[in-house]
View 1 (cartoon, one colour):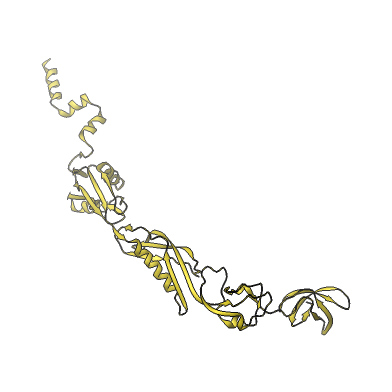
View 2 (view 1 turned 90 degrees about the vertical axis):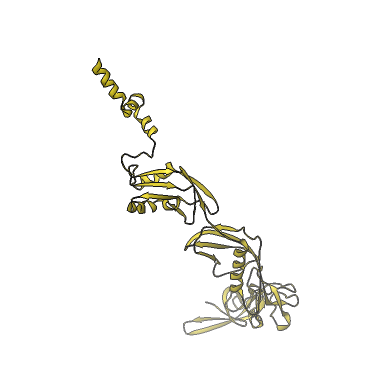
Length: 337
């Protein structure tokens, strides 16, 4: 009995044995704690209470201090723990989260232990770009693109964007103007924000663009097929950004041309309103020619349609009374292809 009691006493004098007798293995590990090492650890990690970061990813060196093996510490410092919070915001990371990252990087619990704080608050530093700065840059770029001696351009921002909080780094703003640029009274122009050469955000700006230029305007009502003379038009500075077509700027581009449709007075002349003069009118007597080998045969005809040079029209051969298609090659002169 004494031997048994002695053995019993020896068992009870061993703390580990007492725990083994009273608790399952899993509960013992829980009581020991996640930071317990099995022998001497290489490095102790001391989390900061809070840390301010600038990059897009948080490294362990930014949120903790270290004590221990210097070579091993350098390895620990470079471990990426988590994405940084958005500029101006914060997040809290605890020891358990960091343990996962350490394990993923091949660090075991035998090598490190955590002392002191059990969580760290991470705050992202930021710089602020005012919305007016973004809007002014867009206006400057567009005005530079559209500038000219006889052009007046007005650019208005329909709504100035909110100020933008961005991470620290080399910042570049680029106004993404589509080329060739066809300005309209209301259009959206994107402004791209780059940080350290990488695109961070795109800000759409709605702009009102008004372009004023000297153009030709009808002085009176112009009838269809009228041949333009100098007295038919005058030069005026008008807003041209809202036009559906291309305006005519030079008098030489319109004199001798034909009005393709009726044009009201005080109307900006656009290129789709004018065309070459008619060489043949409906009902005109025309000469019809046709080449047969080396011989050119001609006949009298009557135009059944009007047209300019190169147009294909219907004509009537007066002698045969046959209707033919012929191409206009000169004044009252058509040719059968």
